[in-house]
Image 1 (cartoon, rainbow, N blue to C red):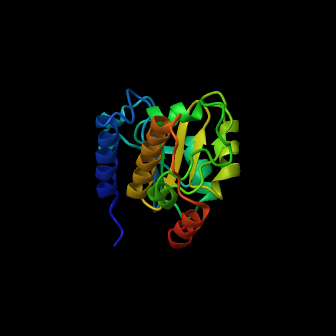
Image 2 (image 1 turned 90 degrees about the vertical axis):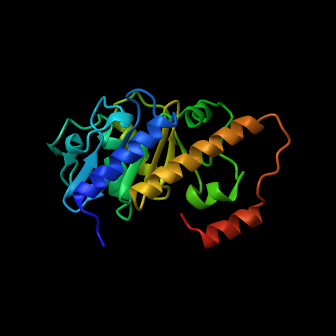
Amino acid sequence: MALSESVIREQFVLHGKSLYDRGLSGGSTGNMSVRLKDGFLASPTNSCLGRLDPARLSKLDGQGRHVSGDKPTKETFLHMAMYHQRPQDNAVVHLHSTYSVAVSCLADIDPEDVLPAITPYFIMRIGRLPLVPYFRPGDEALGQAVAAKAQAHHAILLANHGPVVSGKSLDAAVYATEELEETAKLYLLLRGHKTRSLTNEQVADLRHHFPT
C-alpha cells in the first residue's frame, strides 16, 4: 500500500534527524529527496537535517522545478541526475559524512571501485563505488558527471565532497549511505594493516544473490 505524502514527510524528517544526531550530517550540510506520485520532496537549502519541518519541505514537480515549501537545496541537480538515470529508484541521499569524505580525498584509490570488499554488507548494499572527479560545489557539470555513472551505479563518491546514494525507498537509500560510511571508516582503520578482504569468488557469489 502506497504511503500518503504526509507520512512520507514525517519519515523524511525522522531520517534527517537520525543522520544529524549521529554526526553524519553536521550543520547545514547534506540533503535528501524522495519521489512522490506528482513530483519530489527535497530538503530546503541551508537547512539542518536535524531540524527539518515536515510542512516546509521543498516540493518539486516531475522536472525538479520548485512548486511549494521552502526553496530547495542548491544541489537539487545532483538528485535529478540520479532520478533521470535510475527511474527504478525513489530516494536520494547526499552527505558530507566524515569517513566517506576522507576516503574521497585519498590519492591512491581506484576511481572505478573506490573501496575494497571488506564486508559482505558493503557488496550487498553498495556494490561497486566509482569516484567522480572534483567540481566546484554548485557547478552543474557535476550533475552531468554523476549522470554518466548513475545508470550503472546507485552509489557514487564525489571527490573531496562526499557520497550520493539512491535507493528504491528512503529507508534503502539511508541504510546504504550508512553502510558506505561504515565501510569507509573500516577502510581507514585498516590502512597500514595486513587485511583479508573477500575473495573474487565470494564477491561474485554475493553479487549474484544480492544485485544492487
